[in-house]
Image (cartoon, rainbow, N blue to C red; front, top):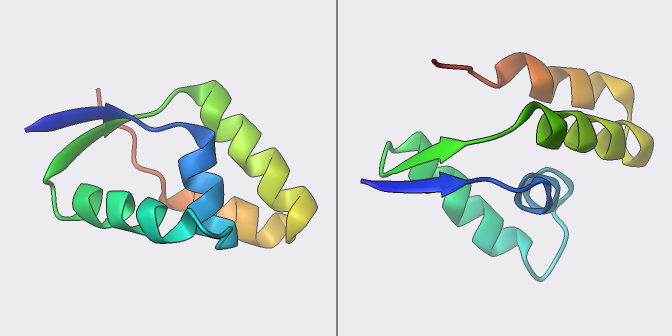
Length: 73
């Protein structure tokens, strides 16, 4: 299985539909959801993503994103 460290740019491209990279970011997220890629993320990446999404869209969407992120040990 592929192991990948997910950068905030991938998350932001996917959440904000930032072209032209949003298509590729969506594919990465899709592979993660299908358990074809094991993904890793740091708390700082999560905090940066929350900040940018809350400033660009709104805090409610940013909070919904944070609430669906699953942490595993």
